Length: 313
Ligand code: MLT
Image (cartoon, rainbow, N blue to C red):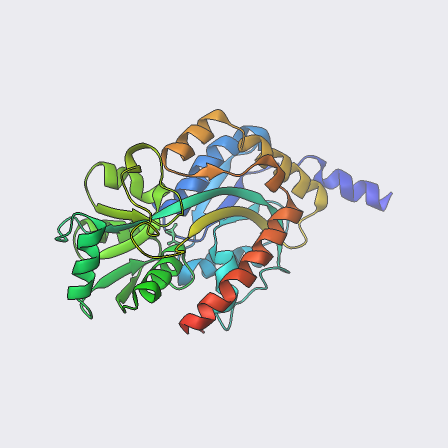
């Protein structure tokens, strides 16, 4: 009877708005994916969805908040590859990535682009490489803080080029983009979900993509970094949905089912694909595969980050 009444207590979920915490500033790539997903998720979940931006410390502040939130299905986290890089980057992370969350499913994969302020005097990747060479010690690289996707990509880019740039951290690449367009910083590596429209409208210059294959659409002319001579360079960002550990199983099952439906939504697909993102296949939208994937990513990036000598308290 006790088990029955506990089950029944969750039968009416959701009874109030569901908050999705975005661990970066509004107007950036994670925010974009979250707001697009919220649109597609509203109907299958039968709930109002509120986006809460909790930026700072490369996404770890927002993740900490959700790890400590009430496990009732009303506070969720949408996060990216930073879930897997932060355990190697932060010595005093306030949560255990694999133990303190319920994994709800992967969402998408997104390429990145190397972009610059519009006034940077280079118009091809070869010219950018020459400019970087000639300006050693003077280049500002914007990112969304230690543990962010832009940080990870910038880190690999610098180590592959054997160049040190001055990193300028923001609470997300939304505000970083504003400064890049304004010319306050020189270069950024950011996801196509944030850069496509700025590249297409000529507000920033774009030089290369970070994935092994060229992109389609308006960005097809950009070479891959591999083509540009940076052998093996490959950074692909992924996003997933999480709940605090201990969220009741019937609630998790409802959210997962709604997520699966949302990820098949034709409008969501159209919006994401126009920005270079690829929705994951249905088989990857489940807790077990999501968690296994994050664990593999932790093991993949740990040695890279260690070799780069990066960490924070
Ligand atoms: C990042 O670099 O991690 C992202 O661009 C974060 C964001 O959504 O701003």
